Image (cartoon, rainbow, N blue to C red):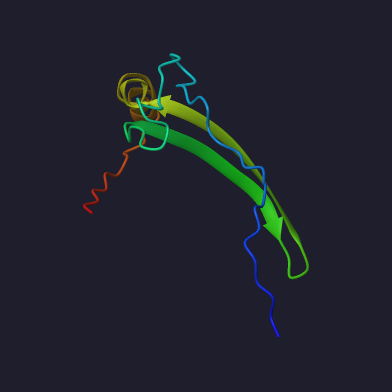
Length: 91
């Protein structure tokens, strides 16, 4: 026999309370923290190792607004000889 009753559970979760451009400080959250702007870039490098029994990964992340990406980062990358690719997604 199963005895079932409703139980209230408490848990902790992490929520993003603030999301700003690391270059200019512009707010990247938008007006609603659940439906923020898509107009930002996240640059990251992942380094680590993976083995059958374990692994380790370290990420270094920089959040940049679209304006800083267009006016600062992309021009600098172009000076270094980088040609970025553009991808478009519809949903």
